Image (tube, rainbow, N blue to C red; front, side):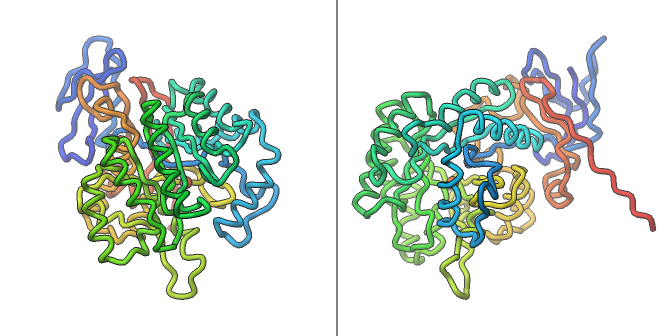
Length: 411
Ligand code: FE2
C-alpha cells in the first residue's frame, strides 16, 4: 500500500509512505505506485505517530453522576461519590464502560493507553476486567496497567499484598500514593515497598506523587532518590506532582539536580490538575499543574494525561488528547510558536518514553506502520483549528476513519 503526500511530524516537504506486511517499508518523496498497488492520497496532510494516553483511570470512567454528582468538585467529594459507585462494581460493568471509553480514545487517534486501576479492593474486580480487555483489544489498543493503591500501600488493609497480587496477575507497573498515606513515615516506606516490588517482578513504576497543594508533600524527592540509587531510573514515573507547583523556588533548584540525575519521567494531567487544584485557596487560587515548562527546559521527560473521563473527579471529557494539550499549554505558559508546534510530543514521543515503548514507536522505515493522519498541514494548525484525526493506521491496517465536520455559514 502506498500513502502519498504526508507532512510527517511538521516537516515542510511532503513524503510518501509504502507499507508492506504491516511495516513502514519505504519513506521518501515521489514514490511511484507499483502495478495493482493500493494508493491513498492524503493531499498534503499531517502524519504523526499515534497518540498515547499516558495517565488515565479507565476503571472509573463514564460514571459521573452515578449515583450522585460531585457537587463541590473537590477530590475528596469525588472519593465519596466513587465509594458509593464502587458498591455496585461488577466485571461486566467495568468491561462495558472501558470498551466504550477505549473506542472513544481510538476515535481520537490514540493507540496506547496507560491506565491506573484501583487495587484497594480485596476482590480486584476492576483489575480482572481490564486484564481481560487488555488481551481482547490488543490488536487495536495497547493497554498498560498500573496497580494503583487508591488509599495507600500501608494505610489500607493488606495494601501491600494487594499490589503484589495485582502484579502477579499481570499488571505492568507498580503504583503508590505517598501523599495519601497516614504519615510521612508511611509515605517514605510505601515508596520503598513499591520500588522493591518493581525490582522483584521486573516491572515499571508509576506513582501518584504529591497530588496535593501541600508544599510540604515531598514524596517526589524520595521517589527520585530511590530511582537513582536502585538503577530503575527512567523505568520510574512521577504522576501529577502538583505540590511541586507550590514548592519554594530555592527548594526546586536543589531538587532539580536530583530529578535530572534520576532520569525519571513526569506526567501532568492539566485539565484535572486545574479542576481539582487550588480548592482550599481563597484568592489567588493556584492552578496546581506541575512545572512542565521548567522540567522540559531541563531536559526532563514530561507527558500529558487526561486522568479522568466523565467520572467523579472530572464531570467532562471524551478522551480527546487535544483537550489536555490545550489546557497544558495555557496553564503552563507554553504558547510560544515552537512550543505550540511541538506540543504533540506531550501526547506522543514523550509519552512513548514514559511507557517504555522503545524504538518500535515512531514513523520510520522498518517500524510497525502505526500512525495517524490529521486534517491539517502541521500540528499548530491542527491544535488551533481542532482538526479531525482522519485516519488511524495500526500495523498497516486502517482501524479508524473520521470525516471532517461540515460547516456552512450562510452569509
Ligand atoms: Fe490519576
